[in-house]
Image (cartoon, rainbow, N blue to C red):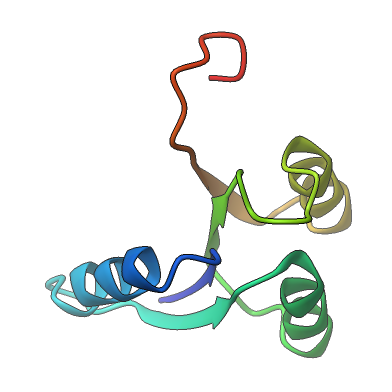
Length: 90
């Protein structure tokens, strides 16, 4: 199984990678620290089973980038990571 982690926080990325590597069936991960890096990676290799997307990714527009991924890759599963107290956003 393959996952793309899209997050600009190195500590979060390394934690997610450690958890996924320790699973009974380890998950191979690739990482992108920006929306542009994710676009380039997905354009060159879109064989990911799912994406872990930080909705607070700097410069990405959050929900707009999520919507773009949903339109461009409708069959791809996207797990949203969000650190927020806003009920409206959640």
